[in-house]
Structures are given as C-alpha cells and as structure tokens.
Length: 96
Image (tube, rainbow, N blue to C red; front, side, top):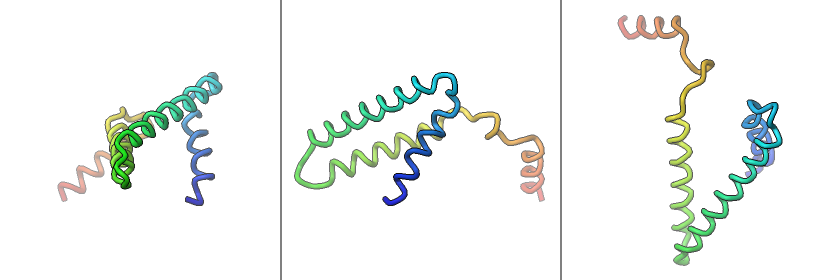
C-alpha cells in the first residue's frame, strides 16, 4: 500500500510512452477509462451488496482475471520475441 504512490504514476508514464505525439489525448483516454471502469465496478458492487465483502471480492477477482487474460492474449512485440539463437539453445537443451 505504501508503494502505490510510486507505482501508479510510473505505470501511467510507461503506458503513455509510445504516444509521444499524442500524449495529451493518451492521458485523457487513460483518465477516462479509469473513471468509467471505477464507476461501473462501484455501481455493480453496490447493486449486489449483501452486507459482506463478498461482492467486492468477486469484483476484484473478475478485474484480476480480466487483466491476466488481456496480458496473455495480446500480441508480442519484437522486443519480446525470442531470437533464433535462444530458440536453438532451448531446443538443444531439450534434446540433451
């Protein structure tokens, strides 16, 4: 909890790094998405309120799984792709 003040601004800056020419628009879109997702999730949690923390737990689990699957299915960038030498070394390790 104490590191959130350090993590959130830096994560936002890293997320906007590819949008050098449109930094203002990217920042506005990111802020709008934060607001909309927060408003929708808060409304859903309050709609399913039963006096326990269960609705919030479900909302957190759904958000975590959504992000996990988005990260897993996104296309890899050229920097993340293994080079031919790495693939060759891995194949040699499997054979031996």
